[in-house]
Amino acid sequence: MSEIVKTEAIVLSKMNYGDTSSIASLFTEEFGKISVIVKGARSPKSKYGKIVDQLNYLSIVLYKKESREIQLLSGADIIEHYPSLKNDLDKLRYAYGVAELVKNLLAEHEVNKRIFRGIVKILSIINSGAEKPEITFGRFFIFLLKETGYEIQVNSCAICGKIKFDSNLYYNFDKGLICGECTKTVVDNYDINLELLRYLNCLKNNESTGNFSNLILQKAINFMETHLKYHMPDFKGISSLKLFNQR
Image 1: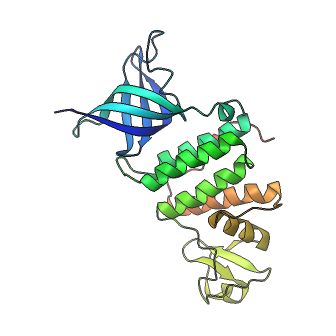
Image 2: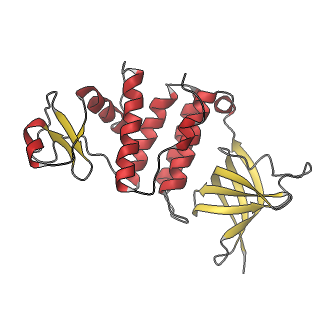
Image 3: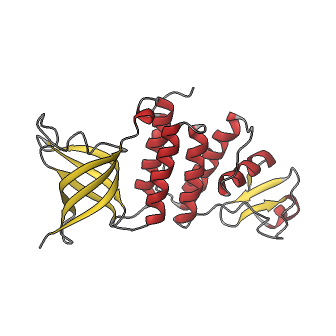
């Protein structure tokens, strides 16, 4: 038996279904990641077709049935649609990256209100242009890794616990950061320079990123992608970031 429920949601993606309908993947505050069908969404007369669009922040009403894989959307209102973000290709590619990471890392029906609030906050910051979108995306990426159990350990050497580092730094994807003195005790190390380490710690601690180069901003995203690929072999990288040319 279906029940009528209301929750807030971010639209992660949308695809055509049948002749006139759409199926949307949503990350909701109360029910986690779910799929919904929007009947008649592609009809010119559809009330919800344009409202249920990728990256929109909505208040929705569902006919929810536990045994049903795809829920039926009954109503939707826009809370925020981030117009500045959608009119800037650079902002848009990183916002798509946020949605793609959530879709890849979270299981169906896994409720996490902290992540939900994080998505809303990060999309708002990207939309506002308060900082470079790649920095805001990096903050979300490192936050999401921690929330989903794939935290990057860059606070101290995983072997000796030292916090002060020189230029000889390495990273082991099983253990974490390795100082130069301890590298001989660990195999399969990834080189990580001091500037990248400092930037990752700024992201992790939500601190000002100062004047780090664009190269370091991209290296940090590549590093987090590599970290995630190691722990999730099925993860092939963030395709959204390759959709548009770099500035």
